[in-house]
Image 1 (tube, rainbow, N blue to C red):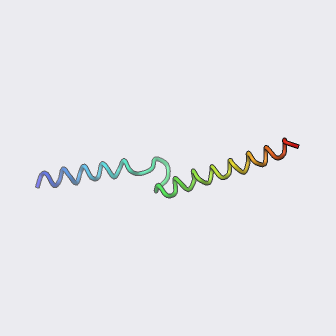
Image 2: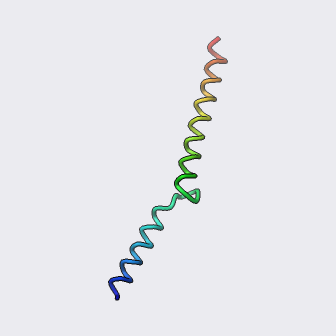
Image 3: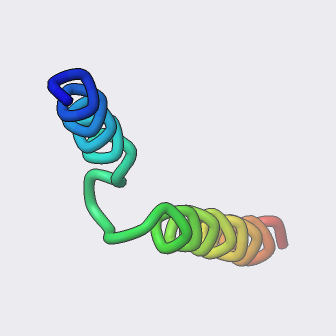
Length: 53
């Protein structure tokens, strides 16, 4: 019975480290990162287009 408790504790600690540091889920975290990337691409494209002429 003691071994089962230790394994459950290790499992809880492992799940605690799998959570993203800022947002609630990894899906939200990666969505924000992808959105930022798209925004930066658009901003740099517009910046380059404006100053290339």
